Length: 206
Image (tube, rainbow, N blue to C red; front, side, top):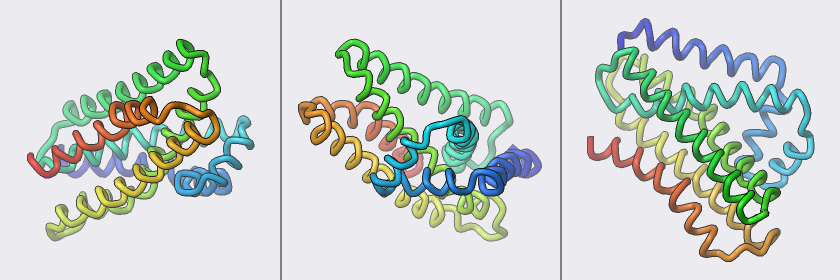
């Protein structure tokens, strides 16, 4: 993929983040803070309305674009088709995770738990995609090669977000709903930790 295409894709992401800051700053700030502190997430959840739905839609697109850029960053050259394939794979992953959580919630008659699980899982991923955006810009356009250092920094930030996500989901599942810890652990391993390890492995063992 040439730099012109990168520029267009990153410009789209920048435009969406700009819209978020210009028109939905309070909601966007709550969303990012909510991925790190439970009380902000609860506040954002209680504010659910048409504006938060727009924020969710904007940040979902940002998430797909930026996480796709992160995945292809480990390779020197990618075509537009390759980027679209990666983006489609990322989209399918989040879509399947959403369907699986809803399915399990319906099977075990725990629809409220399913709703909260989707919320806390996705709020973390969407916030992460916003936070790592400046580092992606540096990695793609800086004049000297520091990509590996930037990647390590991004992976460290991603690990922190994953830690807070795991903590929030485990706390909600055990304290609020009394779920058996083994069930929560299996969910976290399959749908949260394993994808992170898989992507991380691609950076270290390419």
